[in-house]
Structures are given as C-alpha cells and as structure tokens.
Length: 61
Image (cartoon, rainbow, N blue to C red; front, top):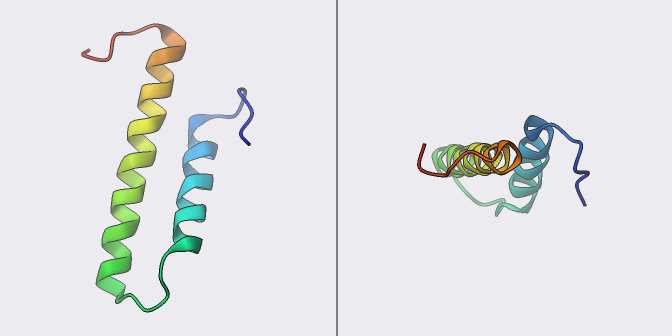
C-alpha cells in the first residue's frame, strides 16, 4: 500500500517495477520495451491526475 505522503515519482517507480516483474518472460526485447513505455505513460498519467486532485485543478486544464 502506498503512503499519502510519497512523491508521485516514487509511486510511479514502484508501479513500473511491479509491472516489469509481472511481465511474461518469453517476450522479445521490442515487446518488453513497448510494455515498459506504456507502463511509464500510465504511471505519468496517474501521477498527474493525483497532483491535480491534490491541488484542486480541473482535469481539463
């Protein structure tokens, strides 16, 4: 479980590590890179969403 006081970068790094650990081991390097990029984009999106919730900024700005 994550603490409410952890920086978004720590949460994103933990999520990336977890997804990399759970990835199938038979994937090619290209597939792993694509999965890592997708996971990184999701982590960044989630971090931005969390920051907006904390600051009260609207999701459209």
